[in-house]
Length: 164
Ligand code: COA
View (tube, rainbow, N blue to C red):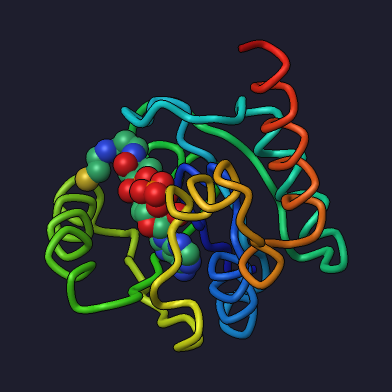
């Protein structure tokens, strides 16, 4: 069975991420969407909230698993018997960072390949920070995130307003 990991922060998952997962499923038997717990970013959602949002958004496909990991990605990959790391390339600007990370991961474990996939052009300008900003300013994110994520974003906003 060919297993791939799709790692990231996923704060929150977007339609662009979903697009990459679907493309990965054409190549791999199982895709594990894995949230990095040690991310230096200050996430809006807890790891559990992010995992629940991904599970809900991907529940139509039994070949998708959702997990979280601490520490090095290549160590986690070995633990779950994955042979590949999936990363999305949205634009040329992603390349340098992704190239460095892929080569470093290969240096750390040469048995794990990084596979780059390109999302549909309509998602090339998406990222999670922009979605959070648009949502917090009352903009409509319907086209950018799954319905369950849109609801969670709205709820966070209400909660935040109530606490200020
Ligand atoms: N659609 C929409 N947005 C996308 C996207 C797509 N297809 N692909 C990437 N993005 C966005 C993300 O939403 C994110 O946006 P944000 O910065 O606003 O949060 C940004 O692009 C890139 O982040 P992401 O894909 O979440 O990756 P990351 O850079 O946060 O995660 C890890 C990087 C977790 C994979 C990396 O840090 C890691 O492997 N950490 C584990 C520790 C380790 O092994 N370190 C050594 C690495 S060599």
